[in-house]
Image (cartoon, rainbow, N blue to C red; front, side):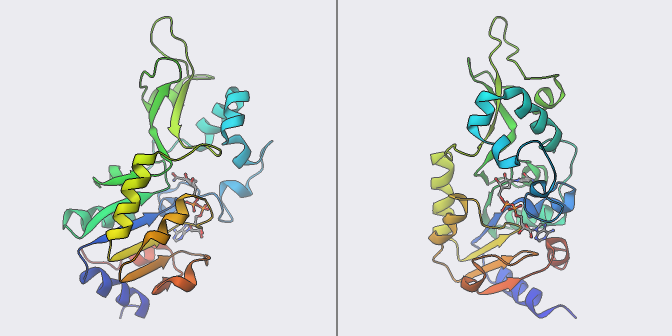
Length: 244
Ligand code: CNA
């Protein structure tokens, strides 16, 4: 017999065709990519500087060499594959039940699982632009080149910056506006695998006016008291129970 909370989630999913999913780093931990704040997360590993400092705009501008050393070592998710949670959300979209995935992740795993309408609040490792001439470079080049990635256009030599939102940088207005619209129109919002501590991304949940707000996370979050259903389990355990 299924767990009571999981049965409630399944009922909510069955009765909705306007689901929006809002996720964070916890969605990809079961693919092997560490999150930030879990006990095995990046914030609990030792570096010369705290990760939030290295991943800031100021640090990038002042110490690009050290930034890229960290970025290439810790943010390279090219070899990872989608897990059961990515796959189930892709299927929900295919069936016409899910309208949008709003993710704080930069790993591209939702798209790798086949999802189409993915709003990446914090950008993606797959987009990289020369800061000088704007030429696009692929992620393989960034992660495999030695030292600071430089523009491959002849005589340009600009630094190629990953299009990921660093601390101190603002989110893309168009992506935010699409995310707000999707959340405001949803009747079921599933929030999962996020500590909800990174702003302004986590504030977007305040736009939800629909019927059911579900929070799925291993740890408690500040929004638990506002949710109609809270499931403190691993996402893999929850979504492997969903038959789609
Ligand atoms: P976070 O602050 O690290 O929180 C992750 C949350 O997920 C924690 O509360 C965990 O308890 C929970 N969690 C971890 N694994 C699971 C699991 N298997 N099942 C259920 N819950 C789980 O990460 P947030 O996303 O909240 O913070 C936002 C940052 C993290 C964004 O800027 C991301 O870009 C950044 N980030 C992204 C990736 C990625 O792209 N995969 C990896 C690491 C960090």
